[in-house]
Length: 319
Image (cartoon, rainbow, N blue to C red):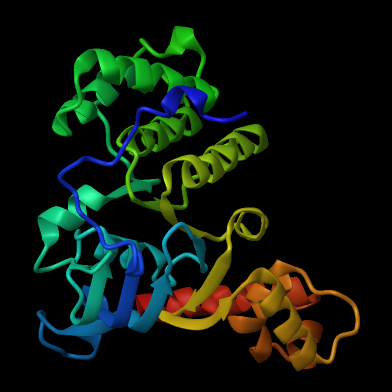
């Protein structure tokens, strides 16, 4: 089903972009956080109370996204996906490197970049006492969208995302997390951004809702010329939606290409004859190459050995 009711959503006339430029360009981007050590560890080691350690959340990332592409950033929790999105959306400033949206620098041209992008996150905040309609009308006014036009678009978008008409006027606090996530997605679609940043957008959604959102994402690209970056740890979603994917691990891009290119590369590296899945591709480029036969024997299965490595990485990051 096409978005025939949304043809009037257009790029603002005063926004000028150079279509010959790449939509997103990251060059040598890094972001380092200072993290305090737990008090007990500091006391035991007789360290200063203000001692901190560096956490390199994003580590020398270079990535280009062409206009109208859908590109997926795949990574486990804590791999650096969300930090990367926050830098693209001007919420964080990179410590090194450059980030550009259609040639506009996220630091020097912050206001223009903010007009070109919109971000959907599992952390989306709302006025929970207000209804979806009231929350979205408030968002529309921030973009100087006329009330009557906004209401019509809001009803259409919420309907396309599967939110019943009788729920549009009810307080958000009475809705499930999945329903609230749909409202967050609707808020991003409402302004028809040129670059859409989807930070794990289908987390908390049931299978039917995931498909509805994925279809809407495709249509937004086809009908409204949007460029879309999506972070996820859902390999099926990445395979279904993305033109290209980049796998990030401990802040570094460890592989990038089309799904088929990555699958073929893993088959060649592992000398596999049978096809590999995207889950196997992801595991190969993250911790799979560290898992030995002894690990499998120790933990009882390859999957349990993988989980043990992931838990070990989380423990190390907290130390």
